[in-house]
Length: 144
Image (tube, rainbow, N blue to C red):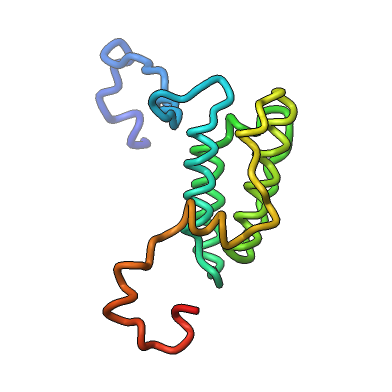
């Protein structure tokens, strides 16, 4: 005699529950954004500017997840293929993607970014090291 035959198995006591798979994640939105999503693009540029110069595989995976969860709606109809080898590569990719998107939406020229000037983009969107310069400015190579 098996366990199932000896156990109290009254099927009327049990109900079938449909599985729940969780809720959809909340889309990343920027308050006060315009129809060209310029503030969301600025947030993408900022995330890219705070990326690592020499990322590890874990850093690359984490950034790819961030890009896919926060900014996937900016790449509807196109493939999102970020270059994650360095901050410079990623920032250049984001800049090119933004300019392509803005061109497709017939955005005014003020929404375009000059992708050839990496340091200008880094100064605008990246970390501000000016407060550290007074304390660690003597470290060779940290500040040009």
